[in-house]
Image (cartoon, rainbow over all chains, first blue to last red; front, top):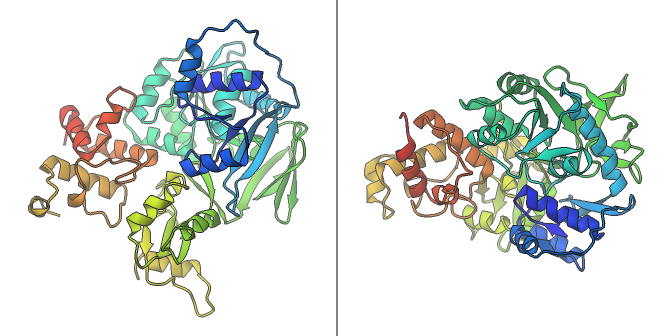
Length: 389
Length: 99
């Protein structure tokens, strides 16, 4: 099942229905039409479900018995990443795997709540369709015994209003992009008990500012589509990540191998980490092909490949310029050699296969790429071309 | 970019629409987009200018600074308000506190 429901309640209904009949939920790396279609093609017999389909199904009363037993070894979902080769990479998750990590997610959130027996209420600003949103707003209600708001508020005023609809203790599940907007706004907020952030690194000053504005404990989660969450930290007060109990990291030349008792096999991440005493670690770098914009990940070589697939595009270079101001959102930039196309035409075609967060801005049409004398594209040359020097 | 220039352009923007167009282009670093040339009736998001939810957040912040009110997206007018420069400008004119 490709679950495209916007409404979180309907998404949950669809997901629970899929689990009860043994269907796996597929999570394309974005909801761009071509990306969804690729996943559909790769999985014969898959089908799409959206809000309207759930509404139609809910109108039909059924007396059929519902299977509430989920086999531990059932493939509960498959996360996709865009991958550098252009072929989406699939990461299947067994039910016992998602159960393992989400029991610990629930525990790390509950650690920040004084009343251990209270019913916890979640509000998420992220969609349920990627791994973080899936874990925090779909699996926590199913596994962690928490309730979730059906909405997905965007603007600070929307987030404040949705929070006010929830009883305490309330938990805000968000990302650095949304949290930055909250801190910058003059909006007043109801007291929050725990704020959860993931998808992109949260800096300590922002974490402290969020805590000052919303109250509560700031818990940052560390994970990926490949692994689900496996570590967390209280970012306002510490910079080291604490591994979930039972997780072990093994540095490798090409990244870090993650071991967890609930994994089917160890998972290799491209992050380079430094291990510290007490089951802690810090991140020292990441493979430069994978980039993050507003909490979404993509591969620069995949975007480049999609650009080159557009008729009329001869050459293309995609890269991430430095942020020009603290807190500014870093978009990727692109230089494209396409004599008969405008920048807008190239972007319109690219939009079918690339999430909007990664559409290059600016995308400059150039006569030639700024290669050096040996034909390479040094970063300095790319930046100079971007400044039109 | 002056109002005179925009009035010479075939796309007729009101002064309030031009002011908003300038705010959008500056806030979002839309290189190569001339504020006066934004079609007031073309979509701002997805197609048209191609803005996304990250832009919407930045825009909401700039609008609250300039006009003194907080944008909301979850009321039923959401789709209509963000459908074009014209509708967003009209929404601002009815809700502005300052600016």
